[in-house]
Length: 170
Image (cartoon, rainbow, N blue to C red; front, side, top):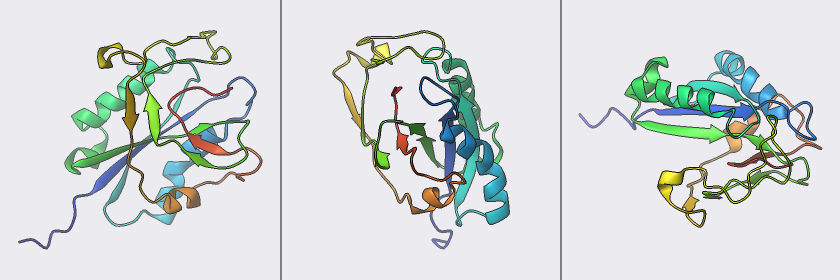
């Protein structure tokens, strides 16, 4: 009693395919290789890799696959993650204009793209989740140690830098 330790944490990881100005998206490479890498190298005790999904770089085009991944995690169709209790969604993006690694700690409920996505959509001040209210609503996220995640990268980090983003950068 009491010696069970903390509940496991299941991490679901997403990345993107190519998009305007980034013909080879490093997030696609990272996410595509992550499962095999963790099978070889292992994960810390109590950490479960729930899923690795590479999404279309299109606001509306990515939704079906993203919803499928979310539903799979909620219904426990991704093996052991349904028993873990704690779930983290880690969303990788790339900002080709950035000069350094960045972690987004705050997201706005707004889709405003400087250039069209891969399906030609270029929203301006559109709520991402209309049920959450207007575009002024902001969500804060809690950060955890990124040290291990950086070790997972099989791609040279410079000159393209990874960002955790909830919107498309061009």
